[in-house]
Length: 242
Image (cartoon, rainbow, N blue to C red; front, side, top):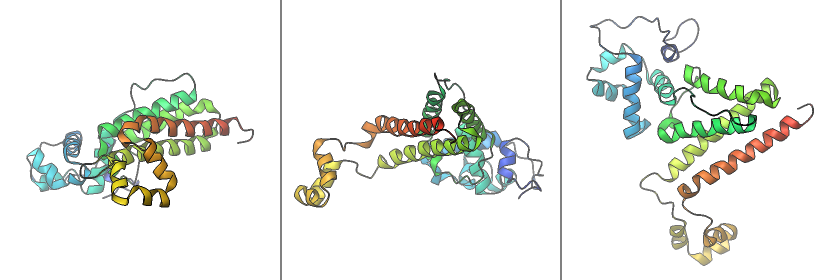
């Protein structure tokens, strides 16, 4: 259900600007923030796959029909839940220069993904909700002193946001229950000699101990990637006529 503005109902609800009449029936004692909070708690406990209007209605003690008066579809649910769990970008230190400030932003966003690992699974097609845009605004403000200009700064924001999200999802997936992240298990499965013959560089890393549990090196790997990106952005900002 969309207004003439073209924005989905979930986006309007996230902004508190939904003027769409509720469906006929008895008034239920629900609110969009309450629905989002209950859905967030469910996803924290069971992951994004557990999110459904039926499950949330059960948690709230109402019928699905009562919930449908507030949330029309899974797409709308994803928007309001994602924005609620993401929250506003508060308390992020400024940093000594724009690169340090941008790095602090990335670490703060990573903390949100660690707190809610399922966030990277959300299918939010229209990132126009208030908290999502507040994070973008905050990062653009930090990048402004770089001199990259509006277009390059927006591109840099997309690179940094995508890096944080992909790294958080990768670490989460590697440590999920039921899988193995022990490189020694690979050696046993394939055989040390065969692995060395087929993948000599990988085998060398495993035998040296550098290819360890991903969680043990998650922070170090994250910082390496972040520093590499920021080094490239600094070089681009310093390049005449960039």
